[in-house]
Length: 595
Image 1 (cartoon, rainbow, N blue to C red):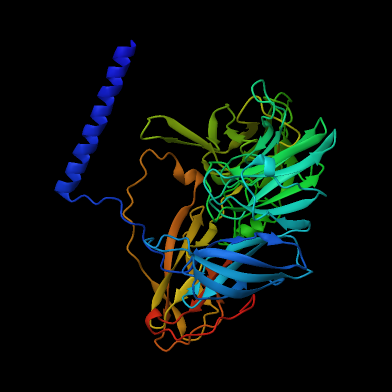
Image 2: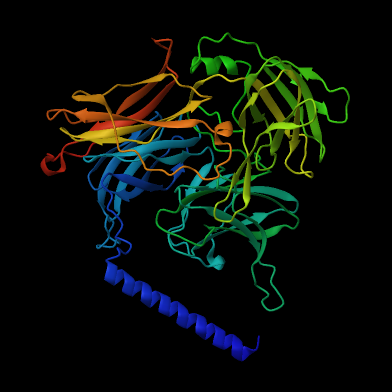
């Protein structure tokens, strides 16, 4: 295309875009179309971050919490012992936008970490007159901990020097595009580990190592020699950065911390840890989650797994002992046999390897295949299961397929659990291989359980993470229950540990009008049926106002054969009865960790 035509085409495109924008504006004015509304103000206390992010056991220091609806903060509430905190002052952020729907607040606190506190993350909440905030975390470290200098600039030439590793630096990326530089020395052949821990859910830190090796144009140019955003980006993996580097040449280097996407804000706090040696390898597995986990490759399929499942539903079935078998390479004949129920173990150690084992069933049988990746897991190791009949026809696989209705292409995902109905007596074989022909290793270990279907209650989740309830008011608790393997029994929900004047009743809410999933594939084979129940917490008009949070317990029990079975799940939700804002009496700020 000639330059003239290219310029004309660009001009034409610009005119068309402006015409579309004008037409859209006119249509909105004529039809009363609503434009994006102002963000809704927060109605409950909410904490975002704490800075500094943490310190060593046995230390006492000042910190600042940022959030909204925190001006009347009274105390910090830790769910575990070992940390004390005192509220010194709470105020509106002087640099906040006065026109903001919910301006941010600042809470100055004094934190004391007990000498016996163990390293790790500690959840806490802010207690206010309006109720309890969400939970955020602070860190306790074993290493010497310092704060970034107050006069820290983005100029690498003025970077503070870090010495005597290990060391932990508390820092903050306060503005867009900000980069924090730190200088350090390394010996020839020395290996150092660098880690950046985020203190805010929306902040994704990155680490860069630089040296002043210059270039043809600039002899003082900083050149990047290593970089890490996170060891591996994958859903439910940690986004904290970790970098291990061996320095071939000794000398002075820089390490920088920045937001991966170039953003920066007052809540973007971090801890930078530098230590000698390679350190602990990063965990390339999903972050641990509380509660019952069934649809994940990393849950443990233990020898008493069937007993656990029956305790969650079908108690009438007898308990079976699980025997362990080992699959062999597909080329080995004859293939070993296993009995059902049973566990198959193996390792895909060579690229392109397929392992096989056979089993026999009598009469029609409803089975479940569950696969566990004991070491490497998705997305590195992606185990594919195939069940074949005696003629070599595929009966089922753990690859879930559905049609993308927008692009018209098939989407396939590997699932950790698969249900299948085998309708004929006969011999079958199970094949296991990686989804690729090139990935393998001694850590590609798997465990596959083949068992009869056991109807039971699966994962239970409570939508609300806290309840702030006014006298005479009501709040709902939404409980999502997964019914596994066609569990059709009753489920009993009770609420225990409520404060005086508060009681729970069954509730109902309008159902969402969800259209059926088009071209969803065999959803019933890979996913449970989900059910949502509603409980209402109601406070009497004279219910006493809470001085401390109280843990309400949502207890779940299956009903089997008309009898209430044992508790299969208990979800904890902190609860406070708070005074109505219009008639709340003034109270003095409280202090302490567990108010």
